[in-house]
Image 1: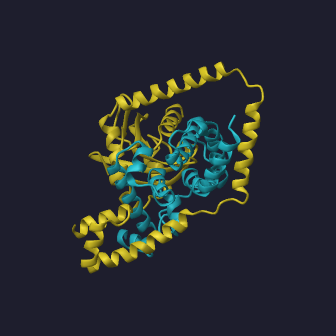
Image 2: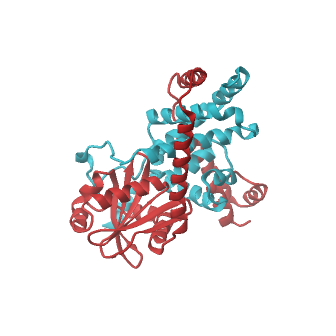
Image 3: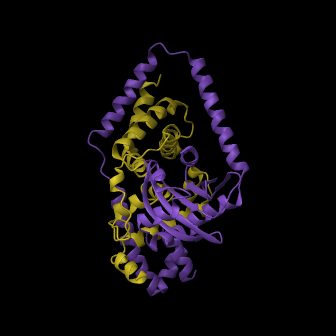
Length: 171
Length: 229
């Protein structure tokens, strides 16, 4: 069982990072209820493992890592991936709005997780490219490439008049 | 440092170094870009900072305390739990090993497409659903994809010396890229793991389809669903 002192320390750490952990989870799952579940479950696991955590200076990295692990643990369990969407809504007309001229948050929603995850880790978590690379088990160069492409894609998606230009270019 | 290096570093968002500052102080164009980029980063941060649900921190603290109390109570058979955990870890290990051992060319090309050409393909615009459904009817009917997730984009694109249909499929856990190749016959399944992305190419009745996502379980799940559908 966690000692009262450890419990207090863990609560302090969680309180300090809860907001950013929730937001990070949100940009992984894109759903506020699921994000809360992911963080809650991850921190329950963290609560149990906290007394054994040796490098207390790396606690923030550790917290983000357990949230990430919980997200992927859930993916592995949740098969098949039947989306809760109405098939009648799936109108893929060539003039369908949605991918162009979006607000920033909508544009972020359109990014694949492979782009939005390092972005959230960098902007919300304040992690360096090297730290993100270690967390994502990839190279620093690959992280920089993803971050650059994420920002380029966002810029394109939110650019005013992008849809108009696109239509003009194709006609 | 030149302008190209400065802009690349700026877009990666890692913060301005001394060398970058020195370049910016002497380059009006990069200085203007820096100002514009700062505004963009502000918008980006505000957009990422979604509101925290009311009472969230309190619920976390309560859940932790409840777990501690539960752990103090008589426990379940820990040996069985440990055995299950070891078995699960072994299964994950075997799965990862299988991916890392394979880096097949067509699957690798699918990952390269996602990294280099996907954004451009989306910018070129989507194809009307009816037209895509007609072209793909004999290889991968769209209704099968729509049972798995929401099609966010579909359009033909040049790929691997031929034409593929590029599909962005939104499933609850990720965005998945599919490259449907009606003319590419495949005898055995291909796999690749590169740059943090997983790809699997599976044969269809006519042609084949490449599936790319940042998570192995998502790729495996969709490959299984398309094979059995």
